[in-house]
Length: 424
Image (cartoon, rainbow, N blue to C red; front, side, top):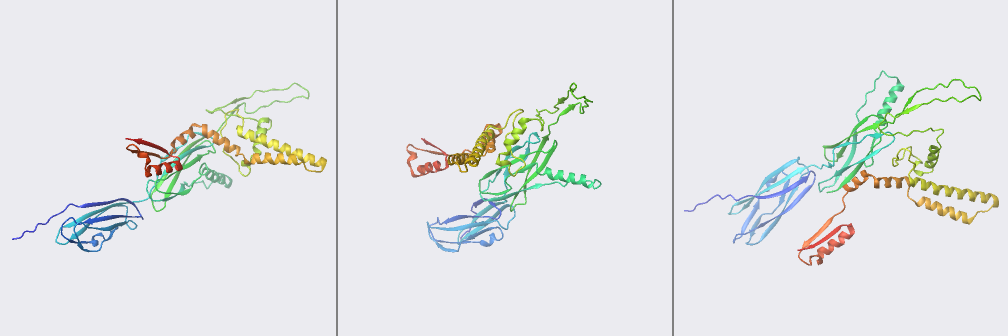
């Protein structure tokens, strides 16, 4: 009498891991006959219908002992929702047990991550700006396209106001949108890459500002929201008295004097001067007009200066070169009027000086770079930047003489990396 026993074998597990929605992943599986007789193998592909998994395995009718058959398992996530996929693939062995391979995968959407989701600027004076950096990461291996949008709350204006006042209110709301600025507005981050978003805060008046910056990812309905806020400070002065009446004065009579007390109610020092009588202010305006940065702009970012401090030394040095060039040009013009011919030596000197002025870096850019190099905020940003890749070759003595180690050395020189060799 013969007895047949139903034998259940343990499952094999093939986990594809995480797969970004819209992308595919594949893996090769090998079946080996460990029995001494030939076997026939056939997979039931109908069990994989509408699961995203697919295989290509023709029926094997004669798989002899010790030989193997390879087939490929594919997973396409284009038409699948976000979540886990778990399916059992039966593989029938003729006159033998049925093998089961559990196929698993997790479908995810592309999503970037921020170094912080809330950006609180310190108090900034009107006329100055403050820059902060937020880092945007792509931890996935697939490229990710992103773009920025701003949540602009609609400001309600009272219809009962006069047209002039209503226009002023609407213009104020429009100006508030320019308080926070950023350079990059869209881009593509490839796998394991990051980029820095530099956000600038320039208040227009003394009040608190808030906005929401949304980072949109193409193909993903989820949004990254960066909450940005800052407080503007406006310098103020208080005069006592606010009005002076000197009375009548006879010609050649004694002078009348009154004392005015100027008080600074702010918590920071404030510098004030007369536009009509301050010669230093006029001289600085004259110097700044020679800079090309002010050609088509109403405002230029410069390093902040302390009370009583002069213009940056880079700007003053540039102005001295500019004055020499102007003096040589006037001298050449005067010589030409007197003699009726050009002076070749003066022309050559002007050309060399002009080339020197043109080729030098922009003075304001130099001043900003110097300020950031010595500013604690700039040092903190530098510390956050990656310093390259460190390659460590570890092994027995004379390990660093192989082709792999030599290749690492050459690659390290190209990428300016640090290579450490350590023998056991």
